[in-house]
Length: 240
Image (cartoon, rainbow, N blue to C red; front, side, top):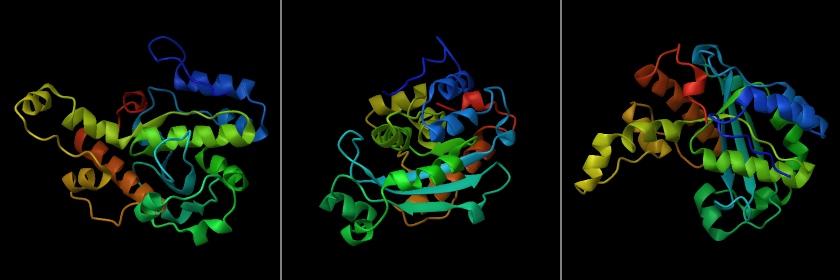
């Protein structure tokens, strides 16, 4: 069974939700993960330990597709901790398809003898525990990990994330001025990772590698805070 927190305006905050899951979880890995908790919503972003996460998958639907690689880069607003980076290629329970291989360039031979995700879950969950996860497009990493953990441990996993794509959307897709421009036939500004980084003057990286994209996401978030927020911004204004 998957567990979904109530909307923030109606029910528990993320810290409350993780605490309740810590009390309910059966598997020791999930008990440890949820017990680590998450910062209170009013915590300044400068005081929050974070980890950027990216995944490559066999497709976009977590009910039909699977994870093939995961990259993690721990960081905070002062430093990106590359020495603590993690990267795994895992064997998907569903076969690779030509389109996904062309996209992420992970081949059949690379995944043939790779471990199942269950084998790396202890390391993965330990690296995530107690840190706020930062992603670029939360509708990939969070639901794919939830589905994968559910299949292996019999319990789902949900947690707050900061989505750098959503932060870009607030500025470039959702303002009244942008909506007016759209009605005038102007094309929308791209909020993909590469294009978002360009707007902040960040260097170009080769995309669609989980570890490289995790690093790119950490750098983008630091740039977003520097340009549009402040170190004192409460984390509750940023997470989803």
